[in-house]
Length: 331
Image 1: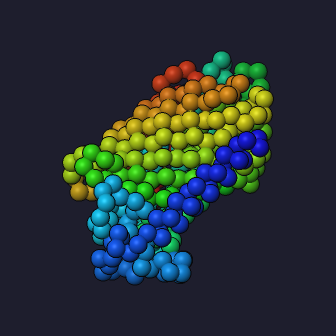
Image 2: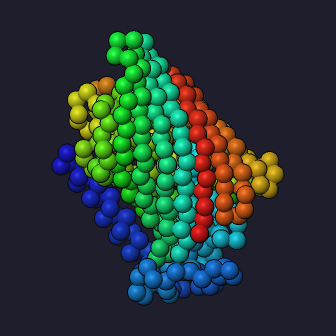
Image 3: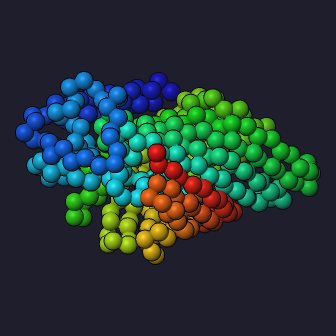
């Protein structure tokens, strides 16, 4: 346990040191073009003192090529970019002074050994807020889970409660430059603040809905993506998170890998197809799970998106299927 705390502290110190070092570069090596969004004034209340001449005009913390042309990152003149409904989150931030709320509902079902389990993931609210710089985003999420189990021996059992609090920071690292991807890094953690249902699932749910635990569980999510054409995109994520094994109640590392293809049918209607895997290391009971999912998304306005998703488990350990819908609003 102490070893993991040391690793996590080292990651946090390294990230903070890197941000400080980049922001201390000579001004001649940075973008001072001052391009502004006409209809929105950025909120400077969270901007560190002395940062205006350094990092304010950057859309990403770094860039692939040396020079002053820092591009990419959030663009408020374009439709919002959301983290939902797929497992792979966006590789861009929302932008300084911008708030974005994403929420929805998902139904999970699994049957094995004469017992069926249904989980309702209700709300799924994720609040994203850009502060300080365009490339820095604060993230907070919570959820309500209701689990219903049915078996011939025990009949029907149900219970529910709030999930643990999710906290994270998304750091926009680089814009896309040719074949080099747009990238972001998300240090994140689950804080034990939820109410634990009467029994836990023997495997993690395929998405943001996770049963409450009794300890802080840190993780790191590396996001990357490419715009292939005006109507086609490719993205992926590689992440690890600490979790708790329901059998031994000891920590293990849950690795996750995803790949998703997004496409546009019209200016307002699009969709995605995705594969992802949850791969535990050091767990006694939890087994690897593989999923395929997809669905449509519809832009009502540039600041409002509706979505639907459906997915299936691709191996025996995975949930049988899940369906859900939601919305995202940019303020």
